[in-house]
Length: 272
Image (cartoon, rainbow, N blue to C red):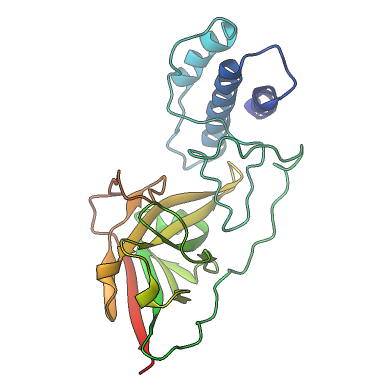
């Protein structure tokens, strides 16, 4: 499609370190234009698309491109420059909103598909007298467009109050099945620290990710988290929030008003 080569060229110009033709601000604008062109291209190629980026939106870009050397207004669309390296293995979340600098992979890397990792779930830690270990079974997640998600999986992390990792990050294998508005995982995740040793104010995060073939990257769709006072045996249903993942839990926005949640089951193992 016509926009792809142009988008790629704009990406390269926007990320070139030895180009003195453009200022850093102009490079960022070029990168944002590339993102818009990729979005338009993707929406035209996908029959079920709701046209994320319309023709009239595209026309607004024409003025910016023509006046790129003098353009100094705020960019009219809330987008970020797309990294050249748009394909990431599970666990290497692209998080386009946060990682503009993660863009320096070599040319051609947008054309290949990475091998799918089978998941990086870790075994249960050895038991210690008087200490408690936590197993969380991820049962299912409710999403209105569950059937359209490709290669869905979860990334599980434990973060302290500042959003810093406390434990190794784990990825589930790709979900086992989809049914109506549910994606079923039915997988056990072993939290890699005794409950008693988890820092005060920590939280366990669950990021739901899926692959977008038209845009050629793995994307976080939504996230959920469990706080320390919610650790107790039995089933728990937790709310889903809009991306980007807010590990500090400061600006949370619910994904939907519909009754769709992440369904978990907790098991505590105490060595007496």
